[in-house]
Image (cartoon, rainbow, N blue to C red; front, side):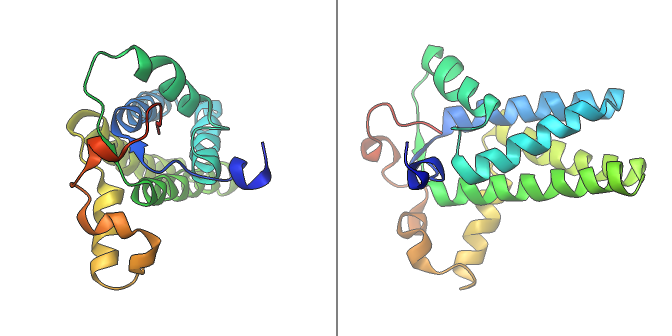
Length: 172
């Protein structure tokens, strides 16, 4: 695997896999909030950073979702553009890195829990309702001209042509 392949992000993204990953994030975030087990925060943070940098390649949760769970689900898989999903993973990385600094570096457990509660809400929206808050923010930033159109030509119409544009076997 070349360096450029390692640090690539899938495009298109299988929404089923994205929702499975979000479900894993919900479970881990809830576990951390209920127990305060620091290792869970480390795993969450690593997972988001890994997914931003490499998609599912270096993310255990991403690999589990794309290679084990999603292929076994008997559902119609829908595909969406990759850049908004990568942006959403970046937001998750920002939240978990912030929570890690608050928890480990500054000893502000309550503040870290508030940040992770917000992550729990966003991940729950994706996992249970199929609503990607990060993708919505990305779309707004494109319309505002902050994200250039060439970053994601397909994002101009996120809902068009999903099923017929996805190559066989492509996943989140």
